[in-house]
Length: 275
Image 1 (cartoon, rainbow, N blue to C red):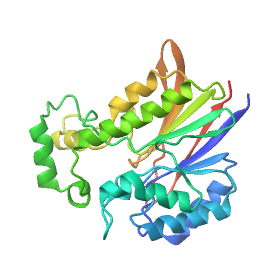
Image 2: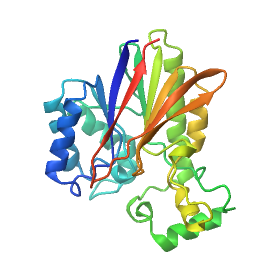
Image 3: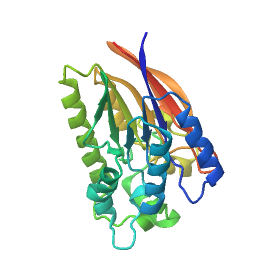
């Protein structure tokens, strides 16, 4: 059966990854036969790194390129706030260099639509057996200084950001579901959205707290209810893999983790069969 192939990479954190490793990754992407490439966040932490990578990928590949921000993509910089990065700046950089900024603007390749989301965490991925409270999450931030607590300067709560990006993706999918030219939707997220994608350590309360900042399972539950969604690819965590999720009465869907890190840049290939 004919299929459309999408290559997804994430979490390269340029400046930490070696130039040789990035060159190898780009060569592998170019040879993958992908119909499109999605850069699913945390490519770098400044415009120079991001633009350089855009140019490298565009030089190596003639297919459409999409971009989704990650948490590191939103670390404030001199004269650029985290709010500006999320709401306008990164989209502007993408537009200037011919890269599709996917949140709010899905693209279509044949009958397949590509939609994307930051999928900011709403604490739904916290270990359900750890019996954690909101006070636990606040204290964890203060004591362990996760990067977002120091380098993101917007005034929103995590749940407010999660709700905003979830609503944006839900609207994108609603429009695509109503479009008769779209047969399948592949969703790419930075943060994981399914429980199997979250690295668990049962009984470890500290790990349970960390889990809260590793995914948005509320978004995943919504995606499983969408008939045209036929695959989901996520980044952020270092593990990789693919799992089929069953959702009667709708068809089962494949879900992936990219599993890319600066030490080991990687990508996932999502092949979505045409209806």
